[in-house]
Length: 317
Image (cartoon, rainbow, N blue to C red; front, side, top):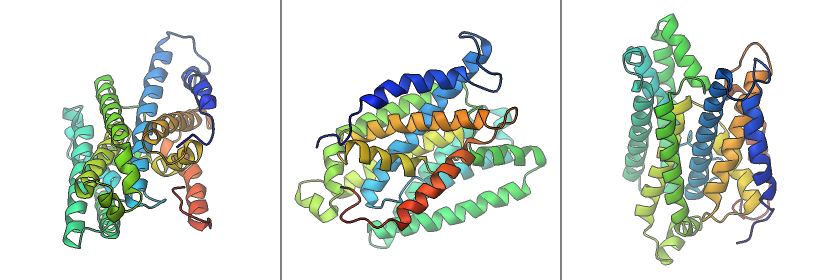
């Protein structure tokens, strides 16, 4: 499968976007090597890793679920991770242990996928059962999250709400390095499994006839997608629409071949989130708005466009 559009414009734009986002901020253009520059560089790196993780997870979920509206939120992964982080803040673990919030977010995401998959298996193991189970569990977890917010003290409520809306400021350097390593490894594995993911986009029965162990592959790929999404939530909180928008743009750019699509979408997702974060930092100087607000303003209309658009043929083409 050949690329539909050349990738060199993205290659040329990537360093310009990353350097520009590092130079520009609330304090204006800063000198390279200054403390402010180091903080911005840390933030840009975090944003790129988070965007890459969310976009990679979105690619896999849209392919396996054969649904153009699928993203980490659909299976409740983001809601579970957000609930785990809120629990850590509510009980004061975040003040005692720096890694408690990302750790509980990660555990929450993994536990949610396990529960969703177990419920889907009880209902026949179909893709539709998986989607329905994810939507139900996500709704329940979202309400539990709101319950914690309503019960939390003022300080805790502010921390939880900032987490819900997305935040790239708080991640410690060891956590960013760990998260980046996880994202890179998961994307490499997904790329190696690209041919089998391509087969799964044809449906489970067709993939089975092509020699794919469909049950095992779906579990492995959804597990990797959950790993990517939970890592992103652990680093930056709940940031929506990245896993929805970017896979569609990447697929239109390079085609539906999953031997190269996850990595390309990850790069595109990282750049997209860096741009959104730069806008969040500079649109209303000296105030900063949560990055999740920016992605929602971009993603909302995009979501409606996908929902209302009538296209001939398969969306995977």
